[in-house]
Image 1 (cartoon, rainbow, N blue to C red):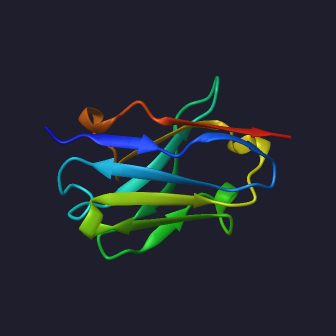
Image 2 (tube, helix red, strand yellow; image 1 turned 90 degrees about the vertical axis):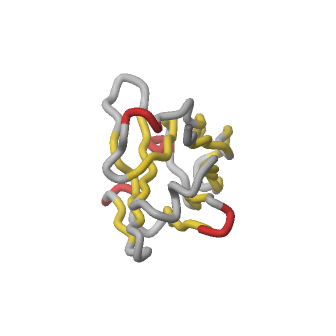
Image 3 (cartoon, rainbow, N blue to C red; image 1 turned 180 degrees about the horizontal axis):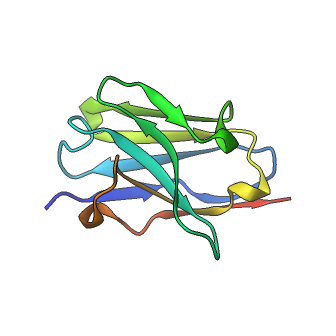
Length: 115
């Protein structure tokens, strides 16, 4: 059974950077459009960034110019480079296919940005 495991979260000051990683137990990342999602306390989960099979990327307006999504097919991994972090980026971040499939939701990784 394929699993996706997120890592790289933590506590960072506003303006800082973090790099999130998504590791797959199978070759799911190579053969699917993938996305990063986040859920802040009291809010619905939202799509943050998507990368297609052809490596076309899209971002929500709130993170454009600050976040970069990319994948490494050889490593079955996907990443989210987050720069110039803001307090409103505080959330649990998840990776999944795009659109997401229920069976691939993992535990996520907590990102906390202090102002």
